[in-house]
Length: 333
Ligand code: TYM
Picture 1 (cartoon, rainbow, N blue to C red):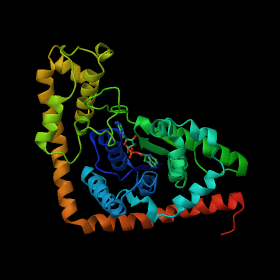
Picture 2 (picture 1 turned 120 degrees about the horizontal axis):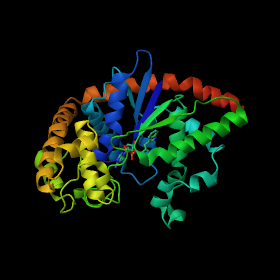
Picture 3 (picture 1 turned 90 degrees about the horizontal axis):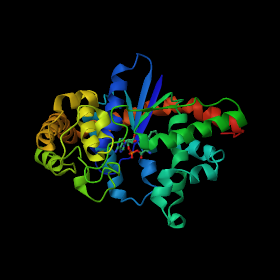
């Protein structure tokens, strides 16, 4: 088993990242049998697909790594690194660029959403972004890739690229399986339950950031969009109530129970009772993470050492697959 996943080091982690991805990363790391590897990385090369402030890029890497450690990633058990420090990602990206087809990339919903009608003015990197993502996982012969649902299409593309490469040049890559959280595949905005919770939403009230203080968390939950009805006894009763469903999903994912168990507890009660309980649960989960994050930022060497050591280990694991891919296409290096 080889677990690989990444996150962009742009700005803060939010509750969607935490429940949809990072919580799974930590659980998989903790359950990993001796001898198998988990690799988690900061996708700083991907960040270049949008304009960046150079002085901030590395600071964001450190902050994001400190946050991941605060969430429970343990550098003794998982390999934590930033993508740019392992040049094999870029090298394999270029090779796979010869295999990926324009049509496949043009169909990516993330490209269509971000490029909109202004595709011509977007960076080439934004278009080829999923090819780099394929390189990220294929480079390590990943078997499982824990992500939120929004990344599923990119991983299906990684499989398509692997299948075509293996067919054209001989078996080189393992086909990776997306591993999507059942509890929190897609956490929605607190202001608009038709949009996912996202760091690029201009409204800060739409998301709970892992650095928000207790009062801010409680205030955002108090103001979250909901409705005037009482909660039903079963999930089926939330079908036409996207805001209510999102808040119940968040509660269930935080508590580690099913939405039906949450509804069994709150059936018949309104949001006046439910929201304070949700706020207490969110604060109880997030405030210890925030405290550890502050501590990690004070003892920064631990973070930078973890990243350096992680990159060395990742580079060693990447080397044989890059060499195999180069040999398969006939490159002499
Ligand atoms: P990124 O940085 O946007 O998000 C990191 C992880 O958080 C998940 N996520 C969510 N899950 C549930 N609900 C939400 N509202 C929500 N928002 C974000 C994402 O699905 C993701 O798992 N392209 C990737 C980074 C990447 C990567 C990779 C991932 C680069 N290479 C290789 C896996 C494998 C991204 O931008 O994720």
